[in-house]
Amino acid sequence: MAEEQEAWPQDGLTARATLLAWLEGGLPLEEAAARYAACFPPVAGLDVERVKATWAAWNPARKKMLAEQIRHSMG
Image (tube, rainbow, N blue to C red; front, side):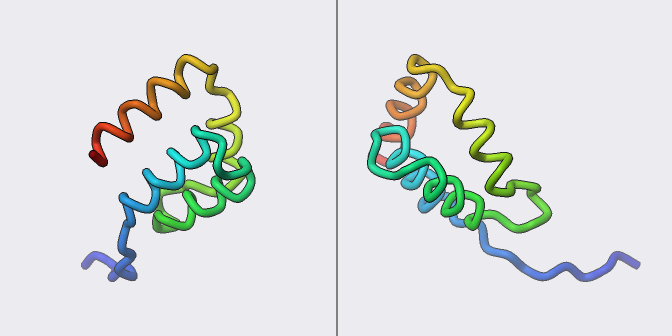
């Protein structure tokens, strides 16, 4: 029998808005990473340090591409 797991709503809209705000310079990395990680359940493995390390490694071209994709998807 499978163990019951706590239901955890994923907040995709807030996650995308947070990432976009960071990409556009509206939020510092630490704050954006914390907000983003909070949008997902612990089982997703997205802790603040992992998010910061991933985002900090992106080059300007990737950041621009992601911002454009997010704006388009939220449009």
